[in-house]
Amino acid sequence: MVPEAEAQDVLDELQRLRARVPLLAGALAASTDGLVVAHDTPGIEAEGVAALTAAALGVSVRMTDATGRGGFRELLIRGGSGYIATYAAGSSAVLTLLAEDRINVGRLHLEGRRSGARIGEVVDAALERADRPAPPVRPPQERALPRRATPDPS
Picture 1 (cartoon, rainbow, N blue to C red):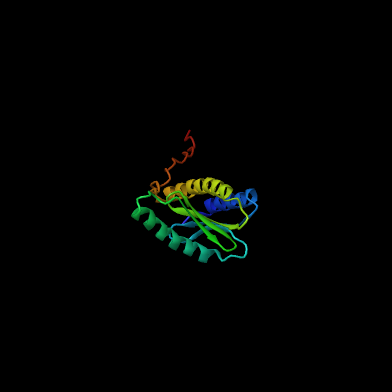
Picture 2: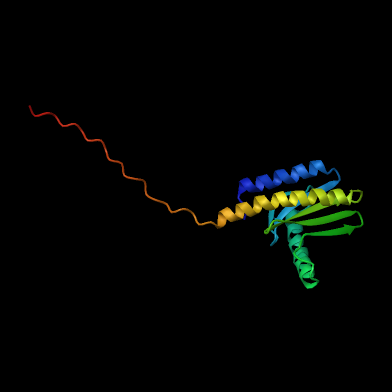
């Protein structure tokens, strides 16, 4: 999916996001088909959340299409003790944030959208590079070996 270096860049962004937003309990980046790219979700099973995010994304995309609201941008769910927010992250990934009930939702959206855009750039660029055909491998040029000096017959 995403090469290790780019996955580390995504993880770094998730950790910076959690440092900027104190009431954020977890952050996860996943592919749109539910595979974990990177996560900072202490005490939460990331693979399950990524799979559920993909399912919620599928329903959300159908809802926006059916109601003529344009492409999916974000989804906010409020539970009894907090929020789950999912943001589009480029064309191939999503960002899911787990937040405490006392969080400022405006700040959550502001920071989530910014991080989603950054993560989307990293993931889309990595996938674009992976889709490019590799340059042809050419055999090394033969080097002319230096000629040995032959003894002068005189």
